Length: 69
Image 1: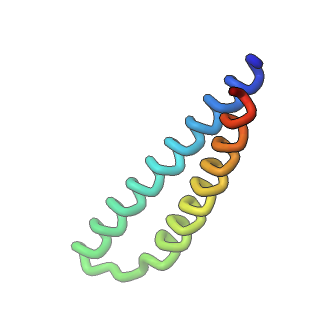
Image 2: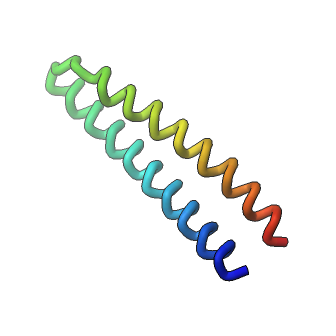
């Protein structure tokens, strides 16, 4: 049971980390656009990748949480 709770905490931390990185990337994109630099495709790709990871972590979290009850 403790392993499941530990795994759930790790998944939640991973989701928060990804979300923080997404927010940071959006801030960088805004700064680059305000400076006139339009080379933001790599940041958009990273945001998509992070969003996919969040979805994966959320799905895994739901599955683990369901089994812990």
